Image (cartoon, rainbow, N blue to C red; front, side, top):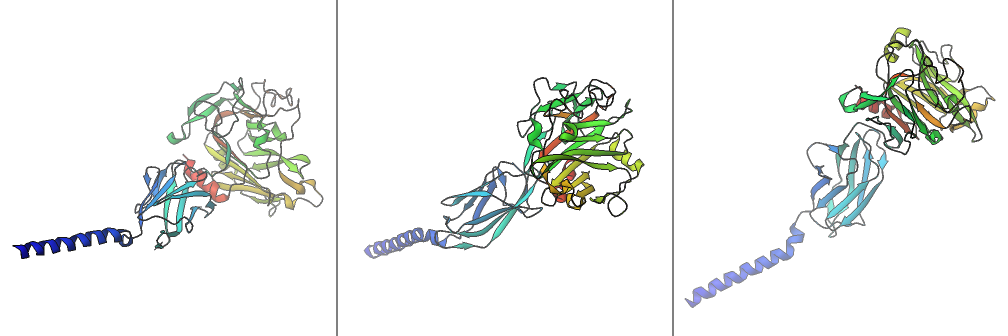
Length: 412
């Protein structure tokens, strides 16, 4: 019996020793690996790229061992153009928190874990995960956005209408269910007025994007879709025959003066290779009949960009380049070769510093008051009749790829 008891005691001692030895070696025996990767409540560590990630999501990576913060190297890149985005990275033992700066709606991203080491010196091979932010694609950098969801308030900045700045505007179904509502203008009195709007265009690089649908019923004139002091700021109009449209924009010349220039896009447009203006580098040829299909009673996405470095303005319809010009190709000695950006140049009482949706300028301006086509009080003036939606301003020139992606994301 004593011999048996002694054997049992020895066996228990060996088992106990093995147990404590295993406990002491746990950290060394555990493999260094990623345990989970979450963007808010969305799993980023699946077999396919995650979708519908919240725009303000914080990314949390949990590892099997404590992470060495001194060697950690993580980057976040926009998938479509490989642009790198700023992230703030914090480490708390096994948990790494990555906070991105200003993710874009509907945009794809890839997060790269370039270097990850544990505090014990274990090294993970480089890995990455991709995901897409919820919503329609919108490039980062919006400074103003009107979605007209039963009101005319700016959803991004502070450019809301004045107290009495919305007249006879209704809100009706837009181009598709996901787009919600659009502002509807009656063609005689409807207007939305946004005060202190000069800051919208006082910039070197610029983009405006919007959706518009004219209503030709009972209308025999053109449509002043919008205007900030007319050509003293920025205006967009569609011609009465629906055979063309134009922007008139005030540009900043060497930071001292302004000058207006039209982005005129009629049917059968010409560029500098086929008889058009020497500064026009491209013009898509569209027949009057096909131009009417774009401009008359149909939803159209309009985008205009200005790149101050290239001195290039580009007009897009439905994601496609329609026309472009280059101020560097203006005649020698022309002051517009010195354009550095856009700038509001209006002076009261002719025009007032208010952006008008539905007309060429706000009601407070006196320019063209007596003209039957240009005075707001004339019902048959060029009041806009139709719908307007998703008006966006950027202080940067969107790329052709960004314009294309935005159109595809927003189209009916």
